[in-house]
Length: 60
Image (cartoon, rainbow, N blue to C red):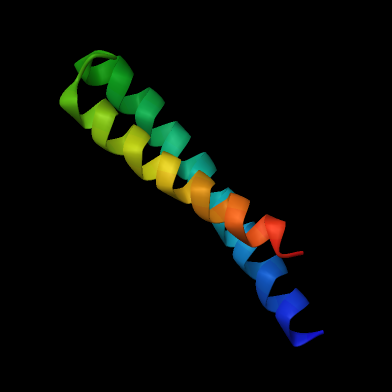
């Protein structure tokens, strides 16, 4: 039961961070252009979050 609560909270936190990252990526893209180096950095960060989400979701 404890692990389920932890995983559920972690999943919610990851989803919030992923959405925030997407918003940041859109904002940076509009300001700097979608080929900006910062877009690549944010995209890689979002990919890491998605990988973590995949791992946590697989254990449920």
